Image (cartoon, rainbow, N blue to C red; front, side, top):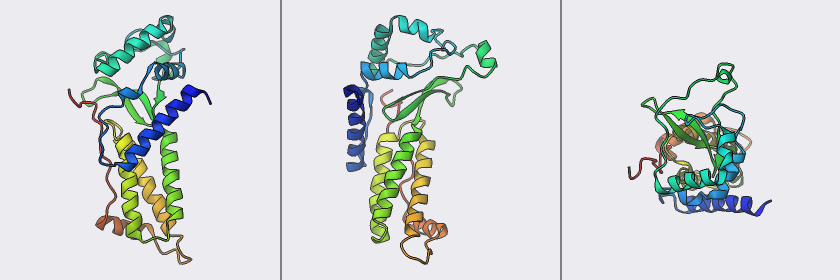
Length: 230
């Protein structure tokens, strides 16, 4: 594994561990974890044959001064001066045939994509990468399997901390649906493991639902608002 890529994964692991240890800790910005290498890595993973973006710049044109363009983008991200263009992208012939799909890229555990705001404008949206949801749920499932014989209240307290830790990192504006999917999968995996504590298989989904009515797991919440300080 390349050293730079390893450092990216180390940063992600460090943030995730901090979020789990301190569920109430608020990450107001992740911009300080973004550097020129990470932006360049994300750029090389995007499509270069798509239509020009809403700034009318194609991937080929952007690459002509790639280092300078990425450095300018990095400076705007870190200073809070980065804002999307408030105008629509003109449809190209590729768009009419369905091949001009908006480009996306993955960075720091999030998939970044163009989306509509509630006011009808365009903005860079972020959602949890599918692979990260799968990995997080698998870790929860493994923990539930290894601890399924412990008292349910004790399991519940630990799961509350783990869920809050997940929200502590991924709870960013626009990502509420991904958090909801994560919580649902956590409940399903927990019920499945509880149901296998004995041969009776009597811990049904309904029984867990009744328990969660009295002792709910933390609901999805936005911890990092992109409007913070605006």
